[in-house]
Image 1 (spheres, helix red, strand yellow):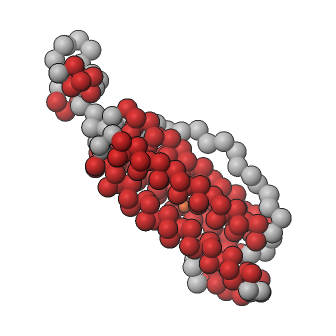
Image 2: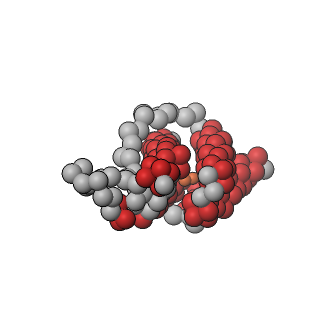
Length: 183
Ligand SMILES: [Fe+2]
Ligand SMILES: [Fe+2]
């Protein structure tokens, strides 16, 4: 019973000892905390790609810049997906601050290489979330995290594929044509 009471959110019931069923938060504090951290991580991803988009445009890679801008928006969708999931589970997601990200890169290869490294880091963040879900026996959030784990496989592949093409000697104009098809 104590455990149940601890789980109850007493929002809106300050003047009453009765806890309303509809106020029960459906994620425990460990899960809420790691999901809130990931909301921030996805926002950081978005800002990294936005900065890369700006750099690519400045270097004349107009199509690559547009695609990176799209990537930045996709990361915001990821952030919103977690945000909405927490609301659905009757929890209060945090609205995070975002530190300033790196604003200059030497060349397009460095940008794509850093993108792959970053996605590998995000993959390990989601692996950790899945692990915490299992430890907490939270099957619902584990299921939620599996969508992101699958997404990360695609995210890593898309940048790895570009690096392989660069290694094979693809010309800059061909790379731009390739990005054009991804806009
Ligand atoms: Fe993401
Ligand atoms: Fe991503």
